[in-house]
Image (cartoon, rainbow, N blue to C red):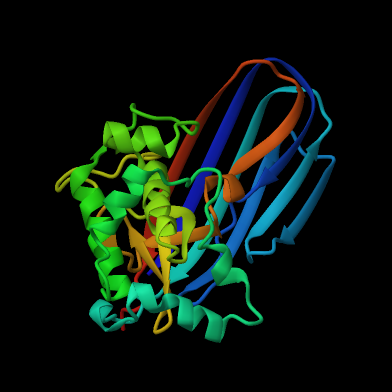
Length: 295
């Protein structure tokens, strides 16, 4: 499948911003099963300098220095991405979760990347209650991906998607207590569960191709950024799962970046001189323009 993606973010400030410095993660990630055919980023007002790079986790980033005084900031990222379906998996044929220590010691002598994602981060600190919730999916000797899928399905069934219940500052403990939230919350909750058991798992940001109700047109700007998780097994490496939708990720999820949690890879962060209070509007369109698998 080939997707055209437009991601527009519009900030409005109460008072003038004299200068701002921003870190941006809006470029889809080149990786197995995902080819980035095109990407561009338009910024208004134009930055005085721009630095593009790749971080330690392999994510593309842009650093923007905006020195023109402004009361509005607009960023428009346009991408064309080709997705291929991942191979079929036998989740029950993976290593037992409580045998992962042996495999990690044997395979990661020179790669701390997988070990990093076993560690708790600021937004994924598990409580005893969260650890107990996770343990129900991981009895002794259960295959790690089989247990991971069970946990993802439990979150999908036990928690309600509610865009008004939380914001980016809501802690995972409150999400767990309320039993509601959005994709970012469910990804962080799943990660807290996995990390309570020292199972390698990482946060994934990106986009999801959505489908309108039957007989109705797709609304422009109705899509949104999405978040899901990725869990490691010796047999398959990193495998993506979506707690918000209770599914194994296939070819309608477009990955932008991976990290320990949202803090590592938020789409836009920065430091401003001035500005005061602000509002932000975000619009995302993900449109399939071709099926790359069609003959």
